[in-house]
Amino acid sequence: MKLAYITLLIVAMVLSSSLLQPTMAGPTFCRSKCAKRCSNAGYLKRCLIYCRICCNKCGCVPSGTYGNKSECACYRDMLNSKGKSKCP
Image: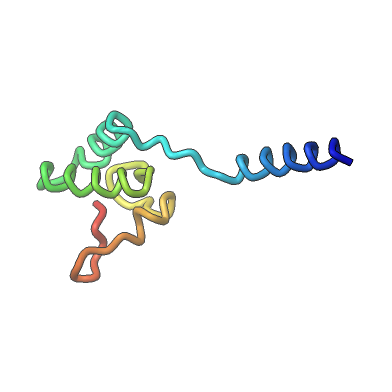
């Protein structure tokens, strides 16, 4: 009976860990992703600041220099005080 509980616990831990999405958003991750994202921005410094804020909170940055925000729902849904998208 004790072995069944231990086995069930191990199976539950493995299944729950596979559902969690690891966050890779460290300083170098956000710096490199935001540099690529903001490479065509007219206001580069502002783009980098807001991109890094969003990356640190969300743990992801959409690919490309514009659009593709559906790849990262948190990044897409973050709004500023005026109700517009905060993330570039």
